[in-house]
Image 1 (cartoon, rainbow, N blue to C red):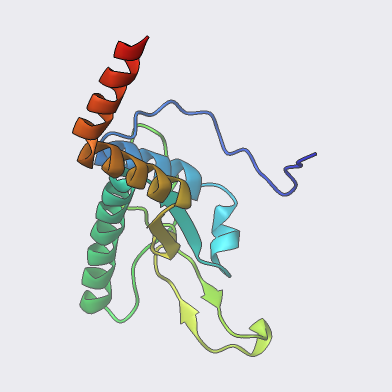
Image 2 (cartoon, one colour):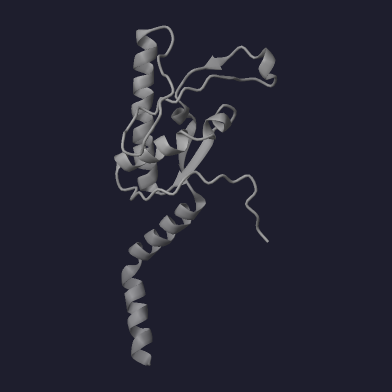
Length: 155
């Protein structure tokens, strides 16, 4: 029997995920949870299809550009945690102050970059398999139609 231990339900929000704005809202909702504590220590892969990768990367790159503009303008980034709502699009500026290293007490490296930069959009194995099957079917469509035609003609 499968168990879902350590799984936290964030929220039920109906989104179409067909625009960058939908991904903005989704990131705001997810990053306003306890996921920030997890991101202090780990990178988070975000598997998805090509469209999910495309829009997620756009949001992340936009945030990265804003982050570097702030860090170039001053010696320390000016990001502060913000409260979010599903209707308002923010800059995903949830600040992470973390210390890296095997022993956190003795670590010297600190980061105040936005938490969204710790997400890694990547294509998942399900999507690779699906894309391969779809490509195969599209490339050999004529053969499948001929094979299907003769098969149905025999009956």
